Image 1: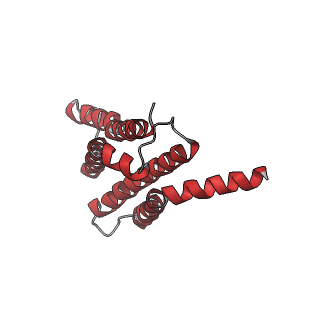
Image 2 (image 1 turned 45 degrees about the vertical axis):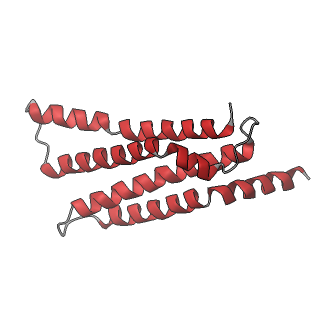
Image 3 (image 1 turned 180 degrees about the vertical axis):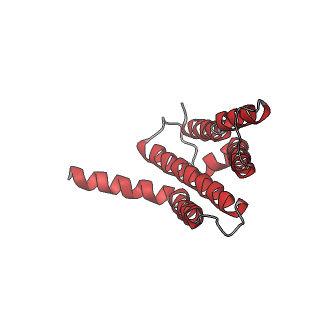
Length: 156
C-alpha cells in the first residue's frame, strides 16, 4: 500500500475511535436516567454530554480532514511502501491528536463546572495534556528524524 493512503486510513481509524469511545458512557447514563434506576446529578450528565460531543466533533473532524493531514505528515507521494520514518511521524502525530483531544475535553469539563468548588486538577490536567499534544503533533516530523538519528547512532 502506498504511504499517503495508509496514513489517511490510520487518521480515519483514529477519528472513528474518538467518535465512538464515549458512546457507552452516554448510553448507560441515559438508560439509568430514563429508567429511574439511579439518581445521577445533572453535573454528571453534563460531563458525559461534554465528553461525547467533544470527542465526536474531534473524531468527525479527523475523518473529514484525513487527506489534508496525511498530506502534511507525508508531503511527497512515494511509490514505495510505508517506511519507518513516515510511520513514526504518523504515530507520533496520532498520539498528539489524542492528547489534544483529551486536553480540550478536560478543559471543557473544568469550564462546565463553573462553581467555586470546581477541582483545579481538571484545568491543569487539560492544559498539560493540550500542551503535550500540540508538541507531539506539531513536532511529529522532527521527532521521527530524531528517532532515525538515535537508532542510526546505536547501530554504529
